Length: 446
Image: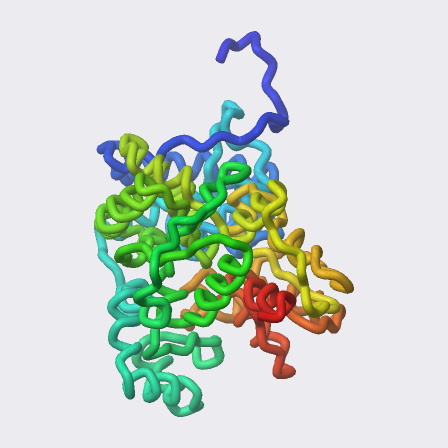
């Protein structure tokens, strides 16, 4: 940039994301990493628009304000690592707050800088036993989903004694909501479905869907997949399960284990790409998993054409239904109203830049009022269950909890089952969270 060119305070242009250069030796250079963190932290310190998001920012700003210099040079690298630990890659600073994201010349991508730091540390130190277990979702789900074992795990997790033991042995907070495990997985419940060749393309959809169950959807909320199939087939959209799958890689990415992310990519992408080639769109019922294929994998593996192909064919379920509605192919033969609905919009759904499609579809139901709450639940898959972060996660979720309490809705929903459970748990009044697909199935009377 020329010295004569005036500097811009912020940017009104659409943000653009640069690929994550994790194959470059410079990416792994710890001295250069700290230099970039110092540069970015200094800009964040001078702006502070992001103070109301995750705990990374108030932690950083408080440390600077309490330092001897009142500037970034007054804090040590131990504070840098605390900031990294509190970033759970929700991406909301990049998408909704930061005025200096590219194409601005300052080129701030705070989440991917934190990802770089996590990756550098993981390569150098590895991860704790607890973190390795919590992010090994396929292995844990397979073990905990064994008949009898599932019942034992669920029973132990429901007792105060079991939770105290889990906290002391594994560092999982005794008060954090934990998912239930099902011996009848989504894949087993939907196994053997006949492929229906009949499909009506409209508005960029092929009209038939290959369902990527996700590890959480498969073992923890299999009923969501059943509800999705009922709703989609009611609307003339054939659904089949993808041939096989494993975790999308998001938990390992949040840990900084990029080699594990690559292994997941290499297992999933060829299968999904074949489905696309065979004429199927792909839908994932958990926002983080859809985001992984839509955004993160293309940025981590920009040279892979099959990754780009899958990204272009990946849809959020309500994004898909909204496109069908736009093309006049969504049924509105609703059998019952839903009343007042409080709807928490997950961060990883907001980042997809598709708008509030879940709200829009549920609002088609007569005598239904949907209030969208665009605030973070503070969950992030593993952050909220860790002993050292749970109380902070509860604080982050409190504004959402208070909004739901104040609304006194007939139903509370979130597209992210984990976020929904976190918020419902914070209500402390017996409230349970539903998935919006379950609510739509109810409205259809299916």
